[in-house]
Amino acid sequence: MKAIIGLDIGGTKVLGALYNEAGELLERGKKKTKANEGIDTVMGQVYKVIDGLLAFPEVEVTGIGVGVPGLVNQKGVVTFSPNIPFKDFDLADRIQKKYHLPVVVGNDVNVAMYGEFRHTESSYKNVLGLFIGTGIGGAIIIDEKLYIGQGSAAEFGHMVVNADGAYCGCGAQGCLEAHASKTAIQKAITTQLHKGRKSMLADLLKEDGAVIKSSSLKKAFDESDPLAVEVMLKAARFLGIAVGTLINQFHPEAIIFGGGVIEAMGESFVDLIAREASQHAMPGLMETVDLKCATLGDDAGIFGAYQLAKATI
Image 1 (cartoon, one colour):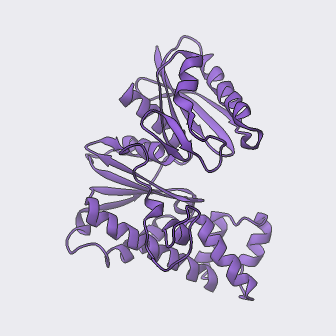
Image 2: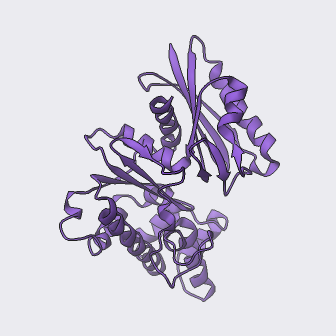
Image 3: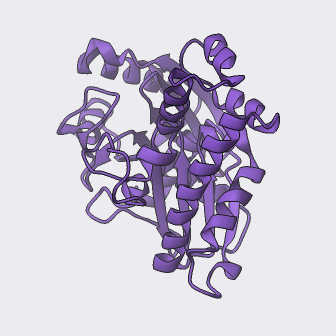
């Protein structure tokens, strides 16, 4: 039986899965990334996951797909990664030389959203993805194929939505990521709490251990905590500006929303984004665009890596 390995290399963990040709999951693997211990240690963890999957009996592995955070060029070189010590690192070549198998590497959000697209039962051909987590990433699918430009297309988190707004980690000012990512949301909440604002989020922040969980944001928002409502409505507004602009630029059949913030907040938050987006999309365009929540959760990365390898190799 032939199979493909899908890998999702993250800042904290390396997830792997073995899928047969029909897309059925045969085996899983998981290791800590140990990103703070350097490249050799990280690759050692990656190899352990791959080795475990290769040990699955009576299977011929024909290729490996990989998703990794950061900028990845068309040759599978990770030019920059924010949470892993990869800089101008030829990840595809390193894995290929060790296992003598074809390898395809892509940005983690691109790969995850490609997985969501392939998992969606629909006739969509042109779809965008918007992933709202610690940062904000995106994906572009045109004619059922992942579009990456020269390697790093769809950095939707770095669309400028407020030219005079907050500075972003990328160095620019007013990026969507600086206004609506989980990091930006927490920064806004912390700033207001330090100014003396009263909020149930103060207690939830302590419970979560300084980094507020998306589930805590959802709880505070549902209980109409004034600060939570204020911050999340502001995030939805900036996301809506971005979504309206994306609809004007691409007019896709659907936009799929993923990431920890969306998983926690759910469809009601997407409805808030849609309401704002309708003020920025050109008349008549938005009515034909479906806005959907992702459904695969943590499996999106590994399933997308499998699908990418299947389509490429």
